[in-house]
Length: 366
Image (cartoon, rainbow, N blue to C red):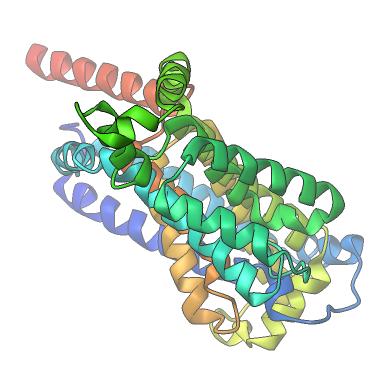
């Protein structure tokens, strides 16, 4: 690392921050478009792609942005100016691991309750009342009572609903969050934890009448090894959600995205064509989703996702807040847990360590 000048070392983190900010701003139009506009502009996919790819300025901006972000990432990996900070952050996140089940139960339970009382089915795009089911599942998740069974039931309700109402795919985080909760259980604080303690304590009346405790404990022991895969399930679910939004609401429905750009006058924020706005937002979502699925720079990707959600809520005031709570929950979980198994992050860490050893050996030899 000694062959980098001090000026370059100081400039690379700044360049990385600027590049990420531009990428995120272009993706702030990523909101669930069907929630905030009623119609869409009459433009075909071929016309949309032609307008972007036949414009030299648009192509130059897209290519230049991609190359710049790639170079900044590579430079950052070589310099690693925040190595000590990242290590300290990871250690701090370990202290929050025990709260992940509670975090997810809240982030999935509250939107279910809100959907039930608001008169829609999981997604604001599906105006079907299913109040009792959703409110029941939501409150059970919040209380943490029969958590794994309720999580599986929530997943099943979502899956059946998605077959009937494909628009539910806009809320893939509900399926991913339910699956993760089914893997890791209720945690604490939860009703399950309290009842478990009562059942284990000597001389309690509840312990004498609890007929499910032994069975539940055996089931937990049987599936405990699967808890290790919770971050993997979470990031794949969140990543698929981003890719679905980028493809379905941007690339395949450009008229919908362009209507959002026009409705909020987003071209006054970044003065580019509406087509480039929509294309850039779609590419950003697809790229971020791909990074999450691969488990590459997982914590940074999750932080970027949270920043995008927050920016969207301020930029698009009509976007329902409840539609994003599950996304916040999954992204927050990944910031705490990291990528989990089957992630590129592990290979990146190995490569970085090899680079460090090579540079140290070379500097020592010099």
